[in-house]
Length: 361
Ligand code: ADP
Image (cartoon, rainbow, N blue to C red):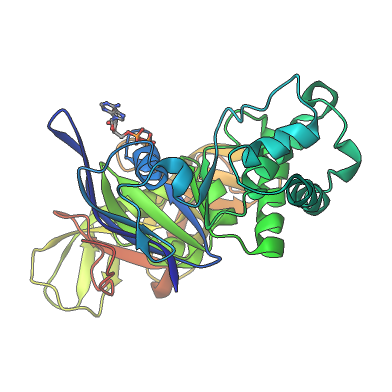
């Protein structure tokens, strides 16, 4: 059963729409990540679910009931924010217990829950400490503990890792994921970081300009991007995009000079964009090449080296073996297996032949 259902969710600010009808179902126990560039409407979506903003149209359903007219405290949700405000003068026990301040529970039951949550988070021995005596990761766990102690139907995370340094962020990412695997909570997590989305999510919701672009598992959005926006947003370095047109006889002619057999019938002259990820470009040998030219720049990363081929515009990036990358100026011919080549309509950006995605409207 879906724990959270958004139906045609619309938000306008002073007549300007910022969410244009979001439809999404989150299953019980699912970890869903909303991701997209700044300003795409992720936080607004989360705030509408939480009840911190009023919806302009559409409905929010949590645990089978429409909650549009309920106060945040009555919605059976708990939120963990970016600046996870825990109180410096309170002990860990009181900080976690703060999540229960308005709950009508006997004191003993509150204590039992605090201790249970501390146990799950590995914080039992720190219950008597104040935040100043904790590491950054432990403080983050206290903030999560405060949300967990309420045992909400849905956890909402608003960029909770973005204030942490890179190492701690990676560590907390793993901790939250492990925690989810252990307790099976239903989570909606907002981030602008595609790596965070890919590594944590059961399903990713990619947003742009108040519209959902695609909903899918990390593998779906990586291997079958619905359009050029998703294709370039997911994966680093971004997918290469090569302009071309259909020849009307079962092939695509690329601006780079390559010819690509393509089984989907396209009208002669139809303009397309051919996408191929840097990691999918491999030496073409005597076979057909998608990319041909001298290496202009190399970026060694250790296990691999990024090589740039040709200049702007139309510069292509590929990954080469870090031990023996081609030299600067060396000509390379690169191709890709057909299952790793993505073809998009140049006018709309939509993938050609992409199976219709119910969330992609
Ligand atoms: P994200 O979380 O993806 O960065 P937001 O949901 O915060 O994006 O914002 C989406 C859009 O709504 C942005 O264009 C932003 O400027 C606008 N917006 C957000 N809050 C308000 C507000 N209170 N008043 C007017 N516009 C707002």
